[in-house]
Length: 224
Image 1 (cartoon, rainbow, N blue to C red):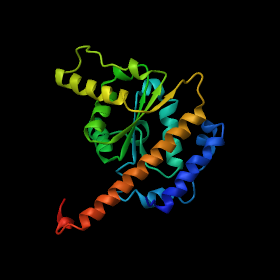
Image 2: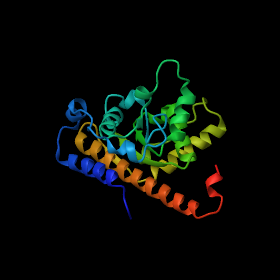
Image 3: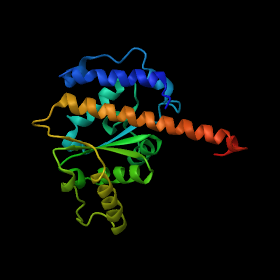
Image 4: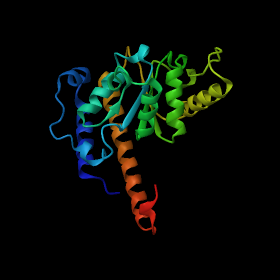
């Protein structure tokens, strides 16, 4: 399978970080790579669309996995979406979130003990799955079997069904597990970035294959 040379460069950069022990320090202090080749290869749709949508419960992980992963991906030249970073005063909440999900290529879901208490987390996850985007789960301080949607009367029956279905699908998707008290922060951030890069390469390869097939079909270039 042919891979874009720029993508291979980014992959090598991601894999090279495995031997480093202080990702938090690196994320905070290291300046972005000078060339950022990834933006020139996959990001052709402009800054409004992101590569990766990070779905998380802010109260649980705002100072840990989600923002660290966001900063790390930015320094690799990617364009991730994190609500606390991408949204600004005046933005319409659901419009911005929904647009970010529909424009992304893959999603990362950071599950935490109170994740299922959040309507927004469940809404985002359900929309990512409904839009047929790949979801990369990170189970932070929680086991997949512990995830469940509880009917507290705040959601309609249709929403409960949609949210429960999304959680069930995510529970049975292979992902990363992380114990924030005992786990290695370097490992979870670099491993997640590794999976993100490999997934984006797969998406790009599939998009290239579809374009080649489409170019062989008469009048395909005029289809939406």
